[in-house]
Length: 240
Image (tube, rainbow, N blue to C red; front, top):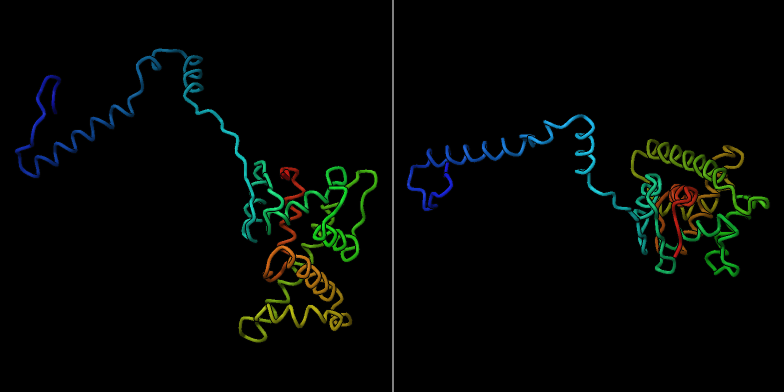
């Protein structure tokens, strides 16, 4: 080890000696890092608590900003909202940001715009006409909690039927073809399975709605909408 006043120069020893020197330096550094300051050891319990408090980093407020984005962005916003992180949705940037913004704005009449654009009108029609939702006049809002339970039920029915179809056909189903054929003809399943028929109907109408925001809709749009309404229902999302 070099002492104070020693001149630093080239190391002329062998490789084993160099390794020993490096290990000695490492041990010295580690011992200094883990050795508690003498002042803290001499102070009482109250002072130690104050010392720990002073060493804690300051809390930095976190904000999740959503600009445009795809279906994966919706899951990011949902997780952020569940963790009590404020989410800023930039409406007008397109796609996921607009879909989430419309869900937040239409949840409460007080914050909704007086004049709805075409997408918001389609959204309202889907809620009222297609899903049978009613506006709570006293609260001035849609009951998104009830909406989540309906979408969750439809999603589970769709996933169960999807799994059954794959097991029967022993291959992965092309769900783009599925939506174009089966969902449009949901009335075929009314007699055999009314619940499945209703789930197919909602999936088809939801796909038509979500196509206004995304050029191509993923399978089981009810799952995507479930995430959208879940984020909007947390109260953590603000529209700008």
